[in-house]
Structures are given as structure tokens and as C-alpha cells.
Image 1 (cartoon, rainbow, N blue to C red):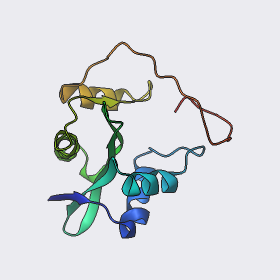
Image 2 (tube, helix red, strand yellow; image 1 turned 180 degrees about the horizontal axis):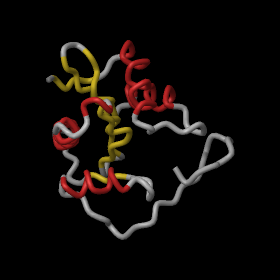
Image 3 (cartoon, rainbow, N blue to C red; image 1 turned 90 degrees about the vertical axis):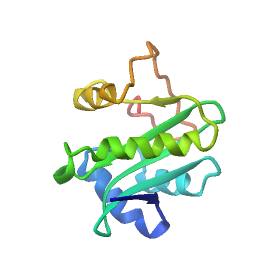
Image 4 (cartoon, rainbow, N blue to C red; image 1 turned 30 degrees about the vertical axis):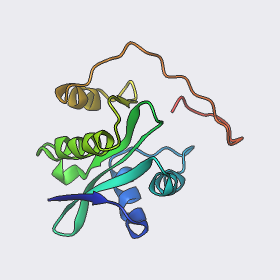
Length: 144
């Protein structure tokens, strides 16, 4: 098992994984998200490999104040084996290495499996409401 920073050549495999895990939405371009994170000064995409195959990934970044992780994904045939915890530790270490002291998560309300997973990792409801607004001119069809 190895966690490493993704490269541009990983994009198709990572997005295929995000699709397999049900994380993509038609109104958000995963290609744009991947490229933006990989080439941004305060973000990246981490991948978890086993036998040279990507079995997990996450997009991680910070805004200078708080860190955030998105697209936390483990291949369905590898879920429930502790790899999600390993990937979250790597994302948290990436943030700590940049001086970030707190991480936030956005989880869709209906995704109770993910909520339980994150609660086991020490995350809790911060009693906040997530608000959003699109700045790219596209119609906002979802709160995410």
C-alpha cells in the first residue's frame, strides 16, 4: 500500500473511481475539480495504490484557514478493510504539513454510511449550515 500525490496521467483512473463510489454529480465536472486541485497552490489529489492499481483517492486542500477533503473514495471491492482510514490519515498529514490545524468535511445528508465512517475517525457535527453559490454562470441544481 502506498499513498502518493496524483499526476495528470492518473486523472481517468481517479475519476472512474469517483464514479464507481457514487461521488460525481452531473452539474459538477470531476475533470475540472481534479485539474484545479492538482495544479492549485494549496490543494492536491492523493491516491492510494495497491500493486500499482489506484484503489483510493481524495482531493485535499486548504483556504489558508481551514482544510477540506473531498471525493474520499475507496474502490467498492476494497471497502471495509481500513483503507479509508489510511487515506484520511494521509490527507490530515498533508494538511498538518502545511500548518493547517482544522479540517472540515461536507457530507450529503442522505449518506449515513459516510457520516458513520467519519464519526469513527473523530469527526463530529459542527452545527453549521453549508451555503453555496455558483460563480461560473451555470445553473445551481444542487446544494453541492
